[in-house]
Length: 455
Ligand SMILES: [Zn+2]
Image (cartoon, rainbow, N blue to C red; front, side):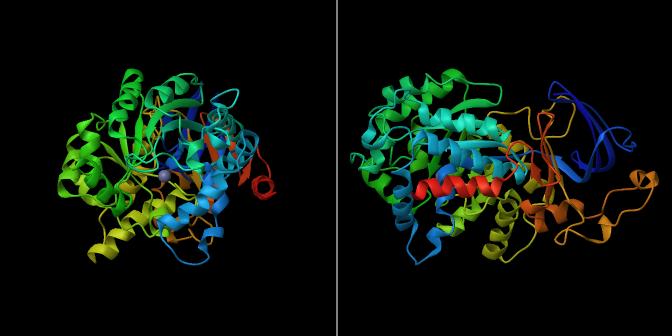
């Protein structure tokens, strides 16, 4: 896709005004601050790079609201989630994921890391195309105009040697080798890349971990794993293997710069050192972690130890990367009773460049020449974001003045996904003035998809 865009303000690492962005073949070929718009498409607000949702389970969107009745824990929530998982067909999955990814696009997300484990028909019977469910997700992303990294998850056990239960049969390939054989049938496309996932050390026996690691290593593909979201997982792992989940992954060669540990909520100091020393990314999902009463993970400590941070909407309790980003900082404030652990820049880097890198798209997530042209416009004059610095001045003189003094802080700490007005993915306009250009009625699409699940 080719095109020319003009950003009233843009975050290029610094905040700049009047930035003309030329795009050829989906990539940024020039960036010129202090320019007039001319005939460019005007992006009237603060333009940031496309957001990367580094951890998603699309079908969990069906649980929104429904799981807020009553109390319980992660484990009781999971029972409700399994009831939804038990009924989905490939057609329903495509329809639901298309609507969910369109919701993500409206929120400024241009790439999703879909941690996918719902592989087979009920009872564990393979579909005619054994990757029918994964293909539905890849197609859904294409129809919503965003990129996807399909993180195909190996899931073999209901916990430390126990066989899969009735619902979990849909997740299981029976062995690591069978998982690898099935996943090898998937093909990458322009908008879709592949990665591996270890659902968790509960779900993949230690003697199968190496198979998943080898598949990813051979392809230089990302590998993601849920790690220590719950103390019960740590206890089970210690009882079964005598080590923590992080140590178990390390001992099987699964940590490293291509690896992302999701949640990493309940870690020992040794776990933190293992993750940091290996430059394993840690994906925080604060809105899910607080929703499920998981606890607050040691994001500051793992980053100080050497781990990049990424962010994910995970259970889709909400889909709002601004909320994920500030929640990470605000959780730390509550925990430490101190403010200012991360700057707005640093939080946004987790939501953009570092998230994309963790999904195997290192060429995305920045506004610089050569990067994929993913441009997200955040309105700075909505009821949430209007501030002193966002007052517009008439005429072109305004483009030569500095940007709003706290535009980035306002975006990260006060904007919501509803403040995203325009989204460009790979040079293609997929959201214009709040309207999705490929799925015009996203709320309607969600309602329809969810209604089909209920029947
Ligand atoms: Zn998850």
